[in-house]
Length: 230
Image (cartoon, rainbow, N blue to C red):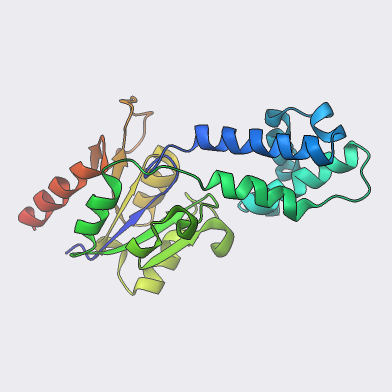
């Protein structure tokens, strides 16, 4: 019996990369007005890539995208010659814009219907804030890699949601767009998995999801079929 459904967020419930790029552009403009040597030296993409540099030097931070961004901004400021820098203010500009996402049209109505039958939770490697996005009312629990201390496909996030919901892995369906993080991670944790393939990608290989859908509205039929089969 399926008791709970867990959802990835970015690129599962909304498209994320155009939003991230816009947030990075807004941050770049904010920096230009206050710390002009930083955007003179770094493009928005180069500022993002500094997060990879920080992660390589400090792998213990790799799961924490908020801290990586802040550390990368601080590194950029130092390299641009600023002894003092408002990292919290800079990150706030980025974070508010990063959460200005537009959920796909079917997301809220589908989740509202599913929430009448199942416990819904979110499992994200990112730092999306469901309160800012306006979907927090649909989920009983929301976990991200920052809180858990590990990112999907590592098992800890999946294990933690089982513990918090008091539900066994075989009673949970995990839904997400990433073949490795969501499908492989969920399968390894003992969850049923649904791959959200909105763009018609080819499966990259390895063990497939239990089901594939092109938008969230198709999930209801998948669940109904599984329940009929028992």
